[in-house]
Image (tube, rainbow over all chains, first blue to last red; front, top):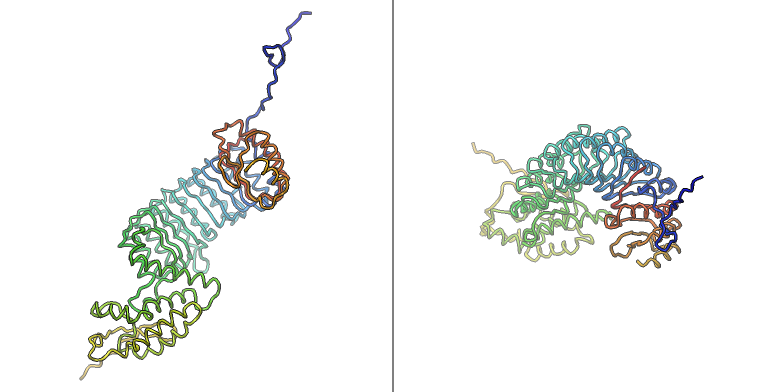
Length: 440
Length: 99
């Protein structure tokens, strides 16, 4: 038998004693999802999971998917700045399926292949989320084509900072789905295409979207693009007949103050009461003009009119009478045609030689509509307009109804117009000019 | 938030404590567990708590080191899995390895 030296597993200190050393774990891997899988399984309340700037291997993604599938109440999954290459994405795919309200996959290296897989998955089960944020990814127009398939379900879509989208992408996204019809419209309420590299040409499909009865979009965000005055003009033309859009954001584009000035005739074309009535009374917020623009008279006027739309919409939500679009139209007509009749329009008319905008019933041929105007004003009396309507009455009466003051000696009397406006049954309609008979 | 105060509020099911952020930043809802004991105790108290709705883990792991992250989260998770009140969970800067 040989004596073999005994080797202690513990280190011996210089004093000859065993030195305690805390045990280090063998695995230095984070298995949080494995550890808390029962938390997801048993917690019926969990509604939202967010991973930000995390890093997961493929097994962790599988565990993550299992965890989310085990949770019955989960509504929202947010993956932000967490890389999801295609192999890992396939492992996580089922996590994004199901009846989720919101899916956010931001800055996660998502490409066209990912979107195709995701759209297929949602189309098969018809379970696309209502809010979808795919910002800061590398998706192109091909992905937009895939996303157009889920436009019937998605209410809010953000593709901001996906710089490869371009005009073709916008076209594919909005007009690629031919199954959208008036009876089966898109649910899209908010669209964010900020920093997607789009310019004036992309305003074409956006114009079609604004004009289309298949879309009821309330919010359009196009910040940080190359849209110029020309593009804005296209969008504003589309907005002329749009009754849904409430917010248009065009920050950091190439639009000058001159371009922004065209927002005024959109919200209140004061060339006639009819035009004012037909203006846009839905848009509430326009973002993009500089601070100096908002400080000048034109900017202030636009802001005031947007405020009128906003206030009318808010009151309409509380089901107040005389509010909503008609309320906004009434307020604009009172404010710009009837209230300041003498002080503004007469002076304005005289100054410009009667060739520009004029209040409708100042035309001597239209004096017969005056009782209708008073009757209409009387109908507008409610909590909101009482003060304004009374001011209008005061102005009209104080200046002896203006219209009757115009005598033959007045140079304005001779400035009759061929297309004067007439107010009938709650709506201003153009009066047809009488045909002159030729003398034989 | 001081550890003693947080522990007491969690332990007593303070109905005003709805959201907890584990972060190095100062804030009303923020708490920074400095030691392993803090994580163990925190996990246990969160597990028992019935009022907490939101939990966000925003520890600057890159400054602390990966081993610390794994151990600390393991301690936290052992208690957290018993919780049934949390609705929103947010995890930041974490490296997950499955096996």
